[in-house]
Image (cartoon, rainbow, N blue to C red):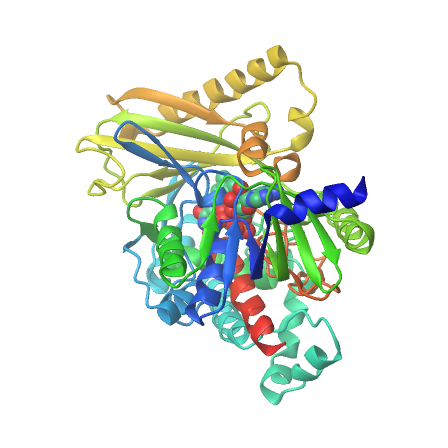
Length: 500
Ligand SMILES: Cc1cc2nc3c(=O)[nH]c(=O)nc-3n(C[C@H](O)[C@H](O)[C@H](O)COP(=O)(O)OP(=O)(O)OC[C@H]3O[C@@H](n4cnc5c(N)ncnc54)[C@H](O)[C@@H]3O)c2cc1C
């Protein structure tokens, strides 16, 4: 029987040098970088389109971002900027200044891009303590981390050779920075005396939650610094968040990469010195190496023997992550807002929502790729827990979905006075189950592994697994979630592949 199934498999088996799994930002960056160097690469994606958590859908003439909406890390010294410059890709971005409008129950906070203007706003809105010193330390840390990560392609170390690479004077001089991975943001807030202002505490927690997936008592101050300063360099991608990913895909295919949609990977096994990857359509692939952006929790179910034990161990160490609830609105009208990004702090509870804010992305008035003239789309996202959505009857699932949708719409209509008088002509909602169905991510876990001082960043699943030719990229591997981070995971992995 085994011989028969092997014979049936081999009739359709295709060989490739490198197989990349997943057409989100991680997988497409990896495919583009490999193809750019003339490397043979095939990418398999289960969905019928690209983008993963940064994908899109269309209804009539309107395009909706499904999840990710804000671009950051695109300055040339930052990971996404470096990839685009290296590949000669120039996405169409509109810099946001202010980077974000934060609407708190008491007042609006304008996150000016300019550091001095922002510091003045923070001092005005959140009196008490040394706001100036606090923010200047955060910006200093952020600058140092970006310049440090550029040279750290083989981190976390996977073997003795990687460890040796770390013994460089420039890196050793920055070793004290790692303390910031072990201590929470609360430490810096207390140091600068800004922790006593309760409104500031709420402001910081919601800003940290959307960037590090954690709050000030647990989020490391080093990655917290990067999250809190990102509104100074925030960009709106014209046409949608998937557009730069499409450019990566086109770059890859123009250089010979084969990108195959509607191929859901069902098994990844070792066969002699190759990896055998099976898909739900019966195709099989033999590859010298596999670079997977499929999250660790799913990898535990796709692999066998030692790799399975490895991914099961990782899954039990990183056993929780956030889910998302998303809302997609069409407005008949064009609201006037200082930024396309609004963090709306809640003034009451919303059932099944586990943060204290909603994040709204409003299509740019001049973005004709997203909407016709006079129409606006809004993507709204917030945090949810998997437990509330598992094992429900259809009736109960529908009830919860409608409850959360109506409560979110109510808050938005009441608090976003800029939308007054504009008809809501369409409302769609995405639950953790929707996310699980579209991306296949285990339990609908999105947004990566929350940054936590109890599980420092260098403990995240490394890009190089202990198994020859099997690499992990994407937001469940180092360095974590967000478009620039997953692009960095791909950059570092490609560097490792060419070094091997
Ligand atoms: C609501 C929301 C808002 C966010 N906002 C932002 C933001 O504003 N800015 C930002 O930078 N980041 C944001 N993020 C995070 C960011 O979207 C992700 O960290 C990043 O896009 C993950 O990219 P990835 O390639 O690692 O994974 P994914 O995007 O999940 O891509 C993985 C791909 O693998 C495919 N796949 C899964 N299983 C299989 C299989 N068995 N076989 C074949 N293919 C498979 C999936 O279909 C998917 O296309 C947000 C995330 C969410 C959910």
